[in-house]
Image (cartoon, rainbow, N blue to C red; front, top):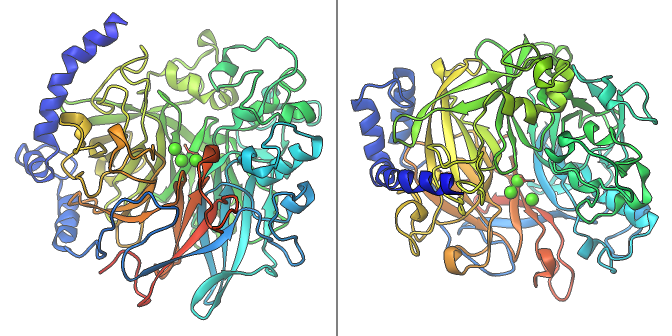
Amino acid sequence: MSAKSEFSRRAEPEFNQIVEKGLNRRQFLKASSAAGTVAFFGASPLSSAIAASKDNKDLIGFEAIPASTEDKVTVPKGYQADVLISWGDPLFKGAPVFSQKADSKAQALQFGDNNDGMTFFQISDDRGVLSINNEYTNHEYLFAHQGKDMSADDVLKSQNAHGISVVELKKINGLWEVNKEGRLNRRITANTEMELTGPAAGDALLKTAADPKGTKVLGTFNNCANGETPWGTYLTCEENFNGLFGSTETPALDSNYARYGLNTKGAGYDWFKHDERFDLAKNPNEPHRHGWVVEIDPMNPNSTPKKRTALGRFKHENAALTINNDGRVVVYLGDDERGEHLYRFVSKNKYNPSNPTANRDILDEGTLYVAKFNAKDGELEGKGEWIELTFGKNGLTKENGFNSQAEVLIFARKAATQVGATTMDRPEWVAVNPKNQSVFCTLTNNKYRGVKANQPVDAVNPREKNPYGHIVRWMPSGQDHTSNNFDWDLYLIAGNPTVHEGLMAGSDNINADNMFNSPDGIGFDNAGRLWIQTDGKYSNQGDFAGMGNNQMLCGDPDSGEVRRFLTGPIACEITGLTFSPDQKTMFVGVQHPGEDLAPSHFPDGGDAIPRSSVIRITRTDGGIIGAA
Ligand code: FEO
Ligand code: CA
Ligand code: CA
Ligand code: CA
């Protein structure tokens, strides 16, 4: 306790000075080039890229909107936002329409709950497919009994509300609409058969009575955010899988369970009471088969999804995939938990653009790394390194409790601790700037920063208890994503300048008109605009006064300017974004409106129960989203 407060007493004034100085974007940019460091924006290929886009004063071309506490979606003048699909909408010809009374069979034919990350794949001028995660479900709305009296069919309904919905779209009168008759429509649920692939497949830790080979697993759940590949597949990321496991007994669980938040109580879903697969006493290896990145072919509804174990097991947020200059596939991966880490995967083989099927298993072989951020003395920037997570290297040895590469991957969190990775303020989405190869990651908030001994206040996580979150960015050395070195700084620190001064007011690019908290979903469009979505406190009071409901903003990565673009309904989170290739349609997710029985009736109005929905955004003049 005393160690922690000593550190913060010592560190805080220092960091505050840096904030005064370092968060003025212009000064920061000037300072780093004047110092002649390799810095972020000092090197020549970068500075020309930045200079070019800095001239583009019209990068963000819409009128900012105010914060809102209303129970609706609001977008700027000249834009329209329509509901594309909501939880429980029929996904197949003849499927039942939405009703809270739907049973498990009906739910399996309907759009899943709590949509999150998604990718649009266009097939032709008027045909496309949206692959959409259904992260979890709210039993308080899924059932009239609010989850208090779960039957076996209720558990199956809950399982069928999870997973992925693959939704075919058809362009009608210039607008993308759901095509219930589409051949590609598919529901993937907590019971869909999938394959475990890569270095951990077949390991003893992945074997169960139902799957003695350790290669076949049922289902995916808690699919948070996503990624997509240039060979046409969808990546879905398993996050808070632990909450669905529990036990009616009291098995002895070692620290590998605790590290992933697995315990006998579970998070209240009660699946283990009716489905033994989720009972830790009966199937202690089943949880090891979840917490992976899953690759899905949305163009083949009969394809078997593959869990890619080379990308490590943790609470995956998204999978930001990019093709490096040398052709290797690099995937950046956040582990969203307080004090967990940021990872990178580098493929062994090179992407083959002329033969898409040659890339189908490219994510099975490669090297996983974890990030360590080092600080320049007393500054909110510095250098960083990627540390390899390979059995036999960096202390990942038998003496330290690792027996194979499979174990390093299955217990990736433990491996990251072993190699001294930096504990972070909940890494959520990562996005690669298509204009210059810099990489951005949201650190959403962390009440344990400066409180728990393993999470001291440091340069990359500079605020005690971090209530508002921030966004870190880094530039790989030589703009080479396979380099083990990078330069980093903080793009933005969220805060409330109407309530606080100093660090809690946020960085200079945050003001009374654009403030928000808990950045989460991020993504770049083709022009290099950074879209930022929030999953924060919506009380609109105290520390959060003036911020309103959760929202989406648009940032200029070079000037630092941030403008509010969208506000969501009551008690929702805004998460999930994808564009049509012409950038004239944007799909955005509204997740859990009215959570905890807050008074939302979105989107149906009246006294309807609220439903998570995908929103389609277009411009009335048919222009590019976000542009002038
Ligand atoms: Fe599912 Fe970390 O958000
Ligand atoms: Ca998220
Ligand atoms: Ca979040
Ligand atoms: Ca969420």
